[in-house]
Length: 242
Image 1 (cartoon, rainbow, N blue to C red):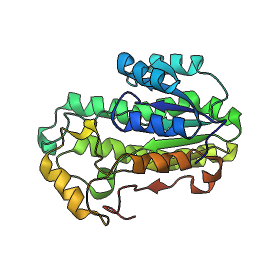
Image 2 (tube, one colour):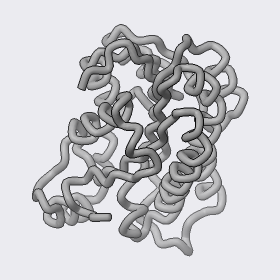
Image 3 (cartoon, rainbow, N blue to C red):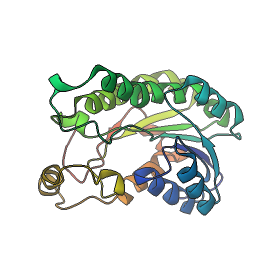
Image 4 (cartoon, rainbow, N blue to C red):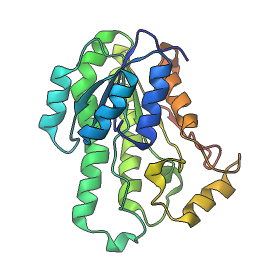
């Protein structure tokens, strides 16, 4: 995939899938702006790839507004990757603390909406804007003992469809990618039983490398992907079919 000449903003770029996405998009020729709450780690990734970097807190609307006000234009793509996942699973829905629920929904769902709202003018102005939301296949099969995360990613999927309708008349495509558990340092906390469930249940058995998702995201950011707007792609090697 050739993304030369396209400026892409990627949130949650400091580690895990985000860092892999950043490297893949840079290799495809995109001009990158990276964003993350962890300024030190995010800046290290940006410096390694020759990308711009902005610290951002998705729970803070003012932080998102400041990012949007200072980003270089034109902006051709936004990847809403940042999310809270670590430390929120493994307990039943009745035991989830309200504060934990609110925090996950604030960052994962509200943050995705606020980022898209803040960057929409720049995406419209580019003439070929693309938004790719990173969802999760947990919202497609209803993973147990992970309800706040599942609900937040279900909201991201629903927003993707609504945003596709609203931004479509301006030529902006909006899609979502729903991966399964990936082999990154960000999934080391996931119980071995859940890793095994995925590895044995995929149509292509075994672990899933994050490069799978990176290649899919790169295509969805391209000018040729507009026909897929509103779609949710379960990029999970066949663990869930839609």
